Length: 269
Image (cartoon, rainbow, N blue to C red):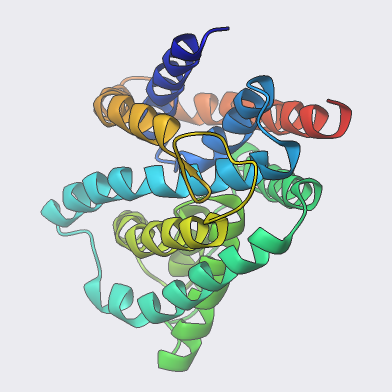
């Protein structure tokens, strides 16, 4: 496949990611990381860098989508800014710090952690698990600790944190719509700190492909982001017309298959 043809695959990936992010209300990292890893392997990128590049590129792409999502939820008054302010310091520390851990982890170890976490997310979708509200929000120290945990895991699997922050907030008696809106706002500091961390940790790494900025591969970042910003609203509109509960179960199965494909490419390439 020629160099230009690979760019077309990034455009197609952006369309796919944006559509399902809008349709199912999920972040794009769960799709982008296994698919980018597979594409990077096919392009002959060094095995020791493919997952790091996929994570860094995905985190950078989430910056733009999180801004768009944040603005939409803020316009509907669905963002608890007091929660965002309380949790953001921990988010920044956890996310940025975890990128240093990821940079020192092997490709195989990162791939296994990612696949296990996505299996957990997929099972949540299949079972439609929703924690019952049982308590209030913790104090400043508690919110900081939760932020470190959410940010750290989000950096290791390149997600905006919604699969962790939404269940946490609903468990703390925040209404579901407001938990989703607040999670969208929390996704921005996660994405910024994660993208910066992967950029710094990959700076000067040997063997990175051309057009890389640290562990961020710029052609994939630009093309995926460009198209996903157009297809996400299409998916969001269709969410009110299609059987989303059934689609989530189908998507959970697809997500697990993508992770298995990624693991196969890494361990048997």
